[in-house]
Image 1 (cartoon, one colour):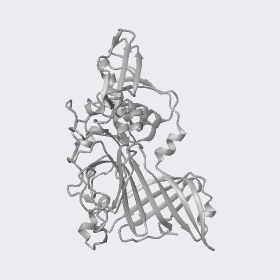
Image 2: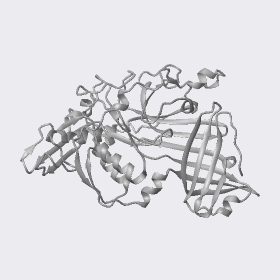
Image 3: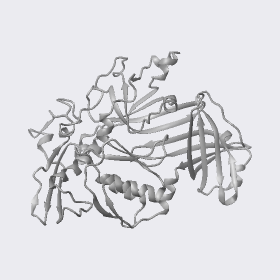
Image 4: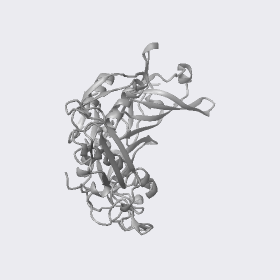
Length: 427
């Protein structure tokens, strides 16, 4: 079953299946019909699906049980190689192709996914959010944390994990992390690195887009045999955002009231109201909601759809707990962070481009901005509202039928046509 599958845009140089417990090591690269890999800013490991053909009943005899390991080397025509290791955790399905051939559909994931299922941790941690996350990733998975840009704003605090999985700890601490403006952090994996990334949303949208020349969606361009244009061509495009103002209001992505009372000091926070326009200063008529919308003679800013009351009992500045803040006014950042995450679902699109850029660029697309030029409805004219810079939240890498396609699910927090989104005045 060994061999190399050659293609115009990629080849599976090697795909070594190992079952150490049974002394099995087998190159199945020649059997792979399709490979799909997923990245997400919400997930600190890579997942995927793999479709393989079996003409010799080898897979049938192996009797997969979801603990098999595979290391895949994907090469381009320019000697660029992408290498990743996975567990084959599930056989999704088996289809009979002809009398002698079956097609197997496997689910694959990095070892972090498998180890996280096995472990429950009860441990005391102390440090800033990035220090605690770094500690968990190193001790439980042997992975390093790569903090990109500014560190979280919080002071060191204490946290005791109540027998939960390591990644549940990471996500609990991540949700507590925010920068000086209240922008949230994401902890995620990339195809090109073994380290796990940690980056704030503000860092993502303050950085310049990866591509100075915009990716362009054009129906006419799709049919032109021009290699240079094909490289920047957006082959598929669809809107994926919810465009649901009611949902955004319920999730706190518009207007919030966050009230905190410290029982020890009898102090209340004075800054208890937050509107998303205070975090994203982009000028009039460019917010994620309609400022001129009126109901019962009031605008959305005049209502309080999301009101929260919290009681804390913080007695000392030296020993902070998970919920504590040195400054009671900083509690408002918790609702800011939640609101900004919810706002990402408003203006989302999925754009498909050639994956060649991912092979030959050192840049990591996930968690970065890209420039997209999109047309107006039933027109080749640029849409100045939807065109601009987007943050890449998810990527789908598809290797199939001699072609490598990359699908980016992206979001923008405003309708600004500027290259980058302007951050509020506290930066």
